[in-house]
Image (cartoon, rainbow, N blue to C red; front, top):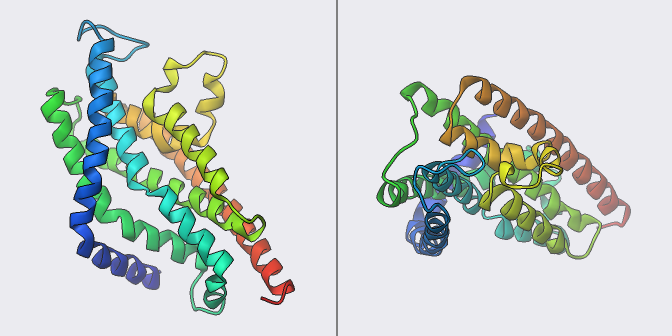
Amino acid sequence: MRKYYYIFRSEVMSSLKYVFNIFINFIVYFLLIFVFLCLWQYMYSDPTQLINGYSMHQMMWYLIVTETLYSVVSGRKYCKKLSEDVKGGSIAYNLNKPYSYIEYCLFSHLGEISIKGIIYLVCSFLIGLIFIGEVPQISILSIIPILLTFIMSLFISTTILMGIGLLSFFIEDSSPFYWMYSKIILVFGTIFPIEFFPKIIQPFIKFSPIYAISYGPANLFVDFKWEKFLLVIFTQIIYFIISYLIVTLIYRKGVRRLNVNGS
């Protein structure tokens, strides 16, 4: 496990060199958040009004949390990198390394986005304080469980994106799959909570990765309850295990195909 810690740490140190770029990219994120915050302020004619169980402040904080988790992952860049590793053949150099390629990709990417995640989290919280003012009622004891669900969300997102990138073993271009995945997460898990969708599709969303990646952590932040935390973290563990096993299967089949083709 120590070798993956060093991989993680080296990526963290490397990302520190590009802190300025992170802040530049945050400007685009800020503009997006600003537009949606203005939209929700317009939709809530009365700040005390409840829409599908959410107050205006809860809805705006929900949006900030989900957009932060969505933006930090850098999914397009990550999928493209993995796809190029497969198509360019550089993945073959990792086959005889003294570490698992899957764990290497996982901890490498988490290290790469860790500084970005901290910056986005702090800046997003400041934006919330400025525009919303009211902070969700969160006790000191609940901060660690909430942060744990945020971290697990990034683990699951990274693993799923890894699987999409490794599909390049079998298809020429995996970017359409990323496009579909990102839009599903954006529409069903970021902009609106599950309660805003028709009741007929709500169960499907709740049993999808959207619950573990976006809805669960954000809903926990705006309305923390310990029983809700246990449900969210249990769901996240299940989805991480499932996504990890699927990625392992894709990788092993892809490497076997690589060896058969003589590459």
